[in-house]
Image 1 (cartoon, one colour):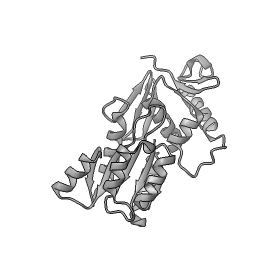
Image 2 (cartoon, rainbow, N blue to C red):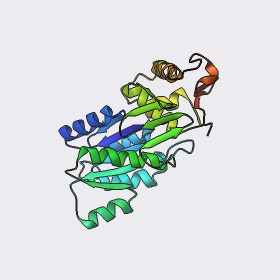
Image 3 (tube, one colour):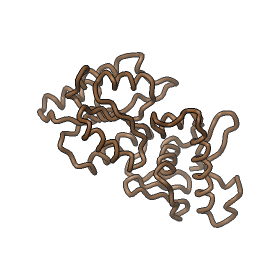
Image 4 (tube, rainbow, N blue to C red):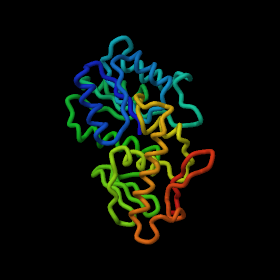
Length: 239
């Protein structure tokens, strides 16, 4: 999942971004409202962590434009990014205004980072129609809170990026996802768009998932992630 952190305090922005990256998310950072709008116009984000007290363009205006400006609407029918407001404004009127402008959740500073992570997980699960921290597709299970993956009950040791990639596949079971789509949603803006990192990471993830099975780990028909020739990849949804 790809997130945008919009925060004008550099140290706080860096701390939030680092914490989210440790949890496997791809994270970009903007330090004012106009920079946020510029990034939202060109990148596909799944969630925006948005401060309200921003220079140039206020956070409420960013939220308003994100929900109403046709140039900021996702292409190909993708859902608009979730918005989690992170702000020191703690009055009831501020909360109501933020939610009325289109925010999905509101968290007051200072906050515990564990709560931030829990709220991010909850918001990202909404579009997949799933509840709880545990994702399950076929014989695959993913505990997004404990950062644990398993196949048929057997643990699968994944890197942070492999975990993030599997999380995205499991949030979109049965969908054909192109390399470009995966690059937009699982990697951040620092990734070379001409790199083969998607193909390499999908390959290592598939090998680890195959190795978790006892019978015939190298047989392609036992592979839950299929290659759709000329289109991308798809996680089989046998359930």
